[in-house]
Length: 232
Image 1 (tube, rainbow, N blue to C red):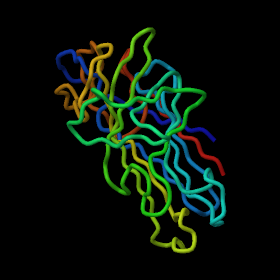
Image 2: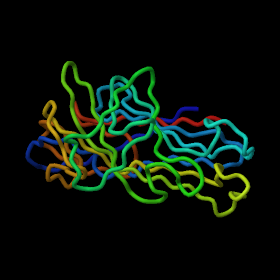
Image 3: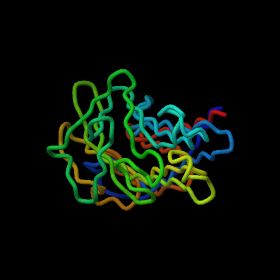
């Protein structure tokens, strides 16, 4: 089942931005170990009508011999030429102020998937329950735009037999809090840089809307599309 989540906007006057910023979104997907396989969220960072990245969480399998894909995890799938900073199958976690300059980039190739976290104690690059940034690139015609997304991955082991099943959890939650990208081709951006915006802003957009707590942001050329998918 697919669900489209929409966001209403209230405009306020501001200068045009050189950085497109989503505003605070706090969009979450959660999956429990009660028979659900996974939940996924499709993200269109720039509102051009194509999915740029899929975020997915899975609560794993009660069988400790389960294959890797059945284990508790949080991961991304790159779409439509999107790239991400990382390597060896893992997304590189970044802190506020880190720059996209000199980062190792992985470009999409055949629905490339990259791991955020796996198994007990959040083993993987992204620490369990802590905010971290990931850096991404968007392909726009012949140009590349660089950006960031703030993500939190929480794997809850409190009520599951995690000592015997080290890769399974009671509940897994991923929250996409906010994101931004530079409007200029190949221009580097620091993690957390919103271009001075306090609310959502788009490239060349002079009205900066204040977002509500729902999910679809539309700012002319700059916007976002979110689809949540659930598989039982």
